[in-house]
Image 1 (cartoon, helix red, strand yellow):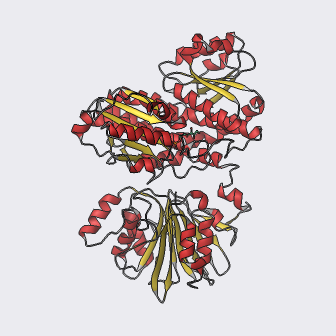
Image 2 (cartoon, protein in one colour):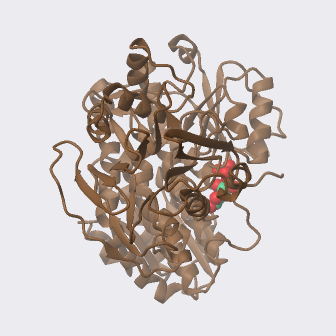
Image 3 (cartoon, helix red, strand yellow):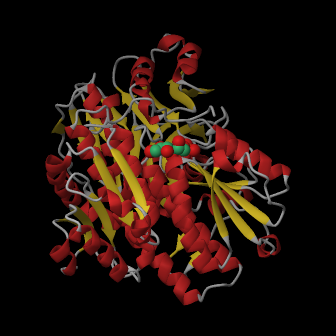
Length: 613
Ligand code: F6R
């Protein structure tokens, strides 16, 4: 989720690049850099931290009037947020520079090959592989060299390339990461997001996956990366203002982030699961098979939404790997007598990597000798630095305070971890494991296909329910934590009281609450506890309760008991249903909060990163 800007025209490039990067600030920063040409040579400046540092270095753009350049803001995926890892990256001789957003899955193999061929690497990034691979193929045609490089690359990329041998040309290419071009008069642009370009042009060309573009000040030529065949991509006139553009036209970051989930789930499992062979690859877990075999218990440690992800994972890990799991609220864990030791694997789960309680819990666990493997979204954050290893969630920066895409990415990482443990400890039939992997690989497509339709249904529902003051969310098994998460989403952004409950607990107290004033959101997936869940719904109905059921396509029985049904796509494998059932709950909370006029992205009293106790 990095930001990219490129410019070729007649005016000095640096101010345009710095301004464009500033407009991408919402993507989050850990470092930034720019490159341009001076006296026929590539010049580059990079800086760790916020853009202001880079701006000071290049003196607000006064140091060069070169009319071509590329710039980048980094959200680290491979390698810590340092100056060495900041983009642009160069080849061995510093003849070309590359900026990149995405993940090169086979970078490890490519880097080893290139090293053997004599290339020297100076960063820990996957992007540097691109610079050296282009260098390998570069004779006198940069476009051909980029094409040959990309033929060997697996993964996702949006990239920009500048070569001193073609001082009037920028090369851009994309696959599965966003990249747009801006068409100007006597100048052209590239950027990862539209807001970077809006002050300069509103004529935007959306590159498609597999497109490669060559930009000069007077022309934009687009072709397919693999065949070289020319293609036409019409420019569209964008009417959004700058704030709308940051959110890609969505009303709020939260909504944008809900819609990004097919991509963020994909990014999280990309390169880690091999559906064809049923194999899971998690080199981030720096524990040998012998060490893993010794693990007697797992403690998942987290707060809030991240804790809910842990609660779901308990079912997967216990079922597939046969290891007992405790899911601990970090704020409770840290003040107890802890019975953990070197045989207990502790897994802190945190979007920000800075949550004070989770960090404190992990420190105590380490003192007891426990190995610690974090699940985290922010590279280089404190929790990742203090853990023995980190499985990154690759959700990209999450700006809405209410966690959405980070949650489903955490689920993805935990699902993979559970299968990895089953694989190394040999607790699962390989064919069954392969089936789970295949099911996970389907999740992005399943969600994507139905997101709009689910959104529409949740919007209609919110019209009817936004004025209620109390909600109850019910679920069983994997969907009990999802009920908790649905209730948390609603309360934190709409300020409506909502409780999540295990449906089987109804008779032990909460059923007394049922009346016409408290809608009950019932999660009714077709799984082994379906009949039980339907009985719970009947109990609510017989007490004149209002039921909003979230149920799968084709489940006609539920319509007979629930007054309202939100449909989600049916899936064969129960293990992946929590991913799907989460989406309408996020959308219900979002639409109700919006209807109530709440500040959805920055709800009162809440902070994105809770760095104090
Ligand atoms: C709710 C939410 C919070 C966080 C919690 C932990 O939408 O975002 O409950 O999940 O504060 O934060 P991280 O995951 O950053 O440790």
